[in-house]
Length: 337
Image (cartoon, rainbow, N blue to C red; front, side, top):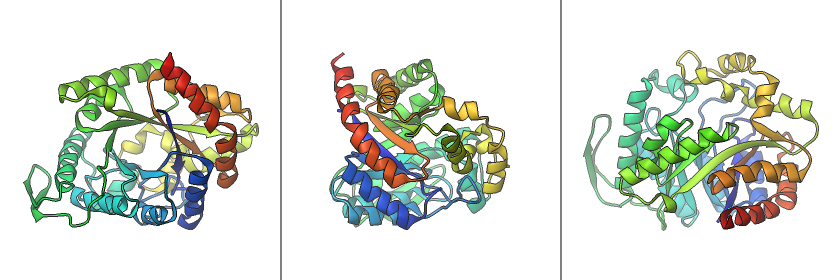
C-alpha cells in the first residue's frame, strides 16, 4: 500500500500555524506527516520550534494521521534515552500512530548546542548504539547499558506507546544504505537524484537488512520529495531559496556551517537550475502524479511531500483534491506491474 505524507517545516512556519497545517493535512487525506527536528533554521528569517512539544499538540488535535520526526539526530544534543522517552510519550498521546526517523545529523543543529561534531564514522557508530538503546528502553524493562558512547543505570520508561514504534534510518547515498538496512525497520531518503542512485541505494538497503536476518519485503521505504503546485516558477524558486537553499549545500555537514546566517550565505551559491532539477514545479496535477509515480516504480512505498509555500493551507487542500487520489491509483498500478 502506498502512503502519502506531508512534510512539516518548523524551519519555516511558527508552531501555531504549523499545527493548523497538520490538522488540514489529516482532513485532506494525507496518511502521515513527518517533521524536521532542528535547533537552528536554514535561514535567519526562519523558525525553529521544539518538535517534540509540537508533535504532542498534533497528537491531541488529530485522530487518524501517522506522525513522527523526519528526522531526529539522537546522538549529540540529545541523549538517546530522552528520545526513547519523547517518542514513547507521543505514541501514548497518539494512541500508537507514530514513528521515529533518525540519522547522523547536521552541524547546523548539533555543534551550536554541544561544541561537538565528530567525523561521520563516529557519528554512525553513535547512531547504531543509540538505536539499540532506544529499542531496549521501549521494552519497558530496566536497562543498564554500558556502551562506547552512552550509559544508563536501571533506566526504565514508565509511559510507553500502545503500539510498536518503527524506526526509519536515513541514507542519502548508496554506501550508507546497508547501515540503514541493518539497524532500521525502514529507510528514509530524499528525492531529486537520478534513478540509478536509488536503485543502488535500495539494493544496498536490502542487502544490509538480509545481513541482519530481516526480510526486506516487510520494510518500508520513505522518500521526501520537493514540489511546488504552481506555474509561477520565479516565486516558487524564490521561496525555496529563502527558507531551504542551505539544505542543498553538502558543506552543511562541516562544523564551520552551524548558524543560519552562514548556511544562507552558502545556500546562495546554489543555482536556480539545481533547485528546479530536484523538484516538481508545475500547476498541472498530471505532472505531479507522473513525478511522484517514478519513485513508486523504483520501490518507495511512502512519499513525504514537501512544499515550501507560501500558502501551505491552500497547497494541502489542492494536493488532497487533485493529486493524492490519483497518485494512490497510480501506486496500485505500479504494484500490479
